[in-house]
Image 1 (cartoon, rainbow, N blue to C red):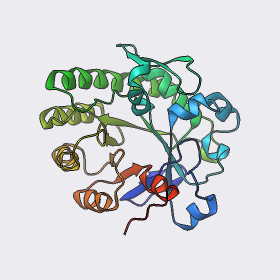
Image 2: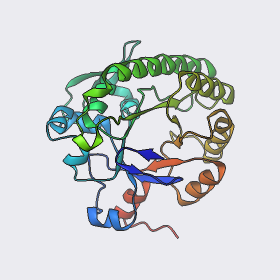
Image 3: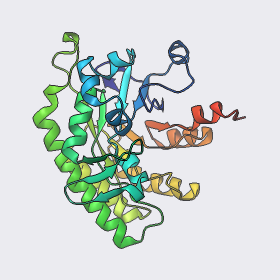
Length: 274
């Protein structure tokens, strides 16, 4: 996978650097371990220290002194997790900060603007993460909204992609905007979502809305049912999975990218996988 800051060998697991740092892991150790690409969180970086400050400092790569590839999520999952503090409309999501209760609004356009300012190699379309359990009608409504937001994200990115801040060495290169497949735990909705996103022609595709409380066997079922409808010649990214056996299994199924905070969170609390 050729990205502006690095060529990433797939399948790849991405350590999560929520607030521009992978917690408890020194940077030199990350490099020694061969981490090719790190995930940063748009929601958290937007709230603190703020995307405009990161832009003024030359983008997220310079802000965190990471020379290799970066991916930022859209903030959709974090806003989803604030279920008591958010209101979803066609325009976007109004939410309250978990830090100080201040009111903020994320739309597909604003999420894209924040990610352009952060300057990661891969950015994500703004989506609504469907909760579990959700009945078919709820999943249908949520999926339709996500697809409309995907189109708005793509159109806004096309109009503003040159506003990111990168050194002259990267002139002529651009960020890569990935679409996100939603649809709850319904395989027919997942197929429709994948097919409609492929029609929009993103450079890569993620399978989102998993690891939200469903049985892990169901997670696998949804991934297995969705993968055939995503192009094998473009990156296929399953969001939020990270148990060691899952990484191996999903890579064997054809998943190119995975991320999860689990490995570093577990290590910080003294848990060892054997």
